[in-house]
Image (cartoon, rainbow, N blue to C red; front, side, top):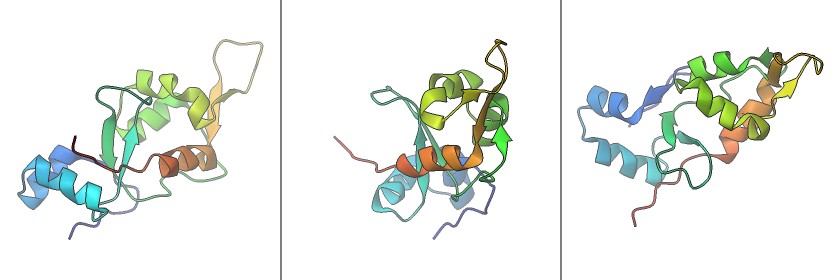
Amino acid sequence: MYEPQPGQVKTVQEVATELQFRPVTIYDYIGEGVIPAVRIGREGSLRPALRILVLPLFIDDRRYRPDEVADTLRVNVKTVYDLKDLMGFKKIHPERKKGLRALGADINKYLEQNKAQWEWN
């Protein structure tokens, strides 16, 4: 069917266009586990971002800034800041306001725990 390339992150719409399917078909394939996807957003969020990717995406022992994670996942940096505790971000310089970093292993763990299981209500 569709196998995303390692390091590649796509939206449902992009995959639907590439495969020439309707987005609802891609959601069905995600729900069946045919296409791997991750939900990025807070629990109960009305529209969490759904990204199609291959895990692990981040290098386990590297530290990432929130903007790097947002760019890689193709989401707004505010989304990453909203999830900073769940993704394992910590201040590397507690005395400064800036300096949040998260280990790739912690981000990968969050993504693994949030694999999408699409359910129609």
